[in-house]
Length: 164
Image (tube, rainbow, N blue to C red; front, side, top):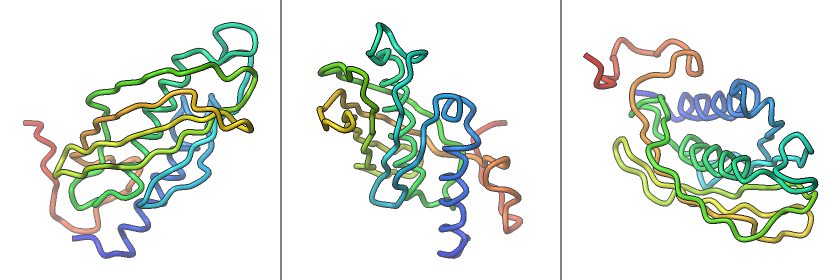
């Protein structure tokens, strides 16, 4: 059983991993603005190489930002006694308008936590105009152990990830 301090340490490791350890996030220059049990904010700066048309983010980038933020919202408040391998199970995105040359910021919070399946809502706004660009729902499974992020388990108890 992880102590409160060990839980905080795991959440911090995942915050750093989200920004520095996930190759896609790092290549896209996604940065963590906020990471706490109540939710996360992730910033995606506009770049022409991430565009669909000059000055407009490719929709896939906003979808990836929704996915990344939703999973982050789950990770930021997760009970790591229940596992640490985070996987998107379902993703739904609605697009509202384009971000004409503006950055995007995703605001996400976990709306329901289960034993292994969790749900998050995400709103993506332009920066600096604060237009709602998209919103999404992310269903996330957390089970097993992600050793490369959390390091060795502090006890001999193994978490069953269902693999046989």
